[in-house]
Image: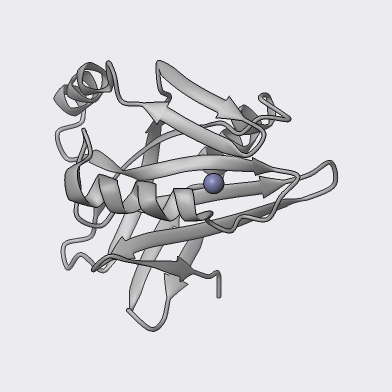
Length: 156
Ligand SMILES: [Zn+2]
């Protein structure tokens, strides 16, 4: 499935199978938030981000309204992954919002800015996937940080 931001002309593509498994993993931690690291690659013109894999954090803090992953040990996991998949790299973060909408909190926005500025696994345009869910439905929110601003992506 593809998410697009028409204003900035960028796309994010994620395989349904990967998205489904993130939703399933996230739901296991109900009622607490849970999440991890997104892996993928950009198209040659950098207009489309393809998310293809994910890595779970070794250490994290997940409460009902907060998820903080700890990047401790993630460098080794990423290095191992890069060795086997030299064309893919860390592209962003995902976490759940149990019983809530997939709208980034101010903490979420600050976290993305700090990743772009000086994260342990820093990149310029980190993507943020938020999975909002309750007992009857799942809502997906895709965002990416560009020039210090978080942009929402929509399905067309
Ligand atoms: Zn959040």
